[in-house]
View 1: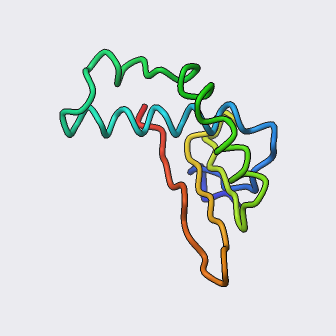
View 2 (view 1 turned 90 degrees about the horizontal axis):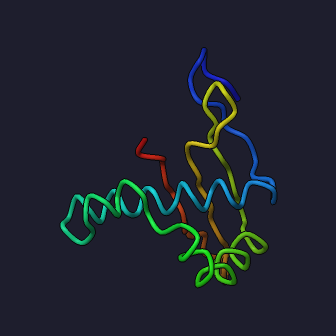
Amino acid sequence: MADQGGPRLRRFDPADIPATYAVFRRSLFDYLHRVGAASAEEAADPPIAEGWQRQRPWVEHLVATAAENWVAEDSDGHIIGWAMSVERDGLLELTHFFVDPK
């Protein structure tokens, strides 16, 4: 779905994991910096690879069991947003909703 030059939304593809995880970490560290829990240096260059080593099983589980999983791309095809939900026991939960702060 395109919106006259705006971001394009599409379903997540497993090949998107590296880019979506990077959006998640950049967004998270931008927020942590704004609330005083991370330095400006960490926000500018968040520890993406280090986080991936710890969080990979969790992220891969959520991706594999997601009820809905969508990405937003800019006009160049770069992922700039990620939204994912899971359904458990009849409840739909939005687990990820992140936008790249750059």
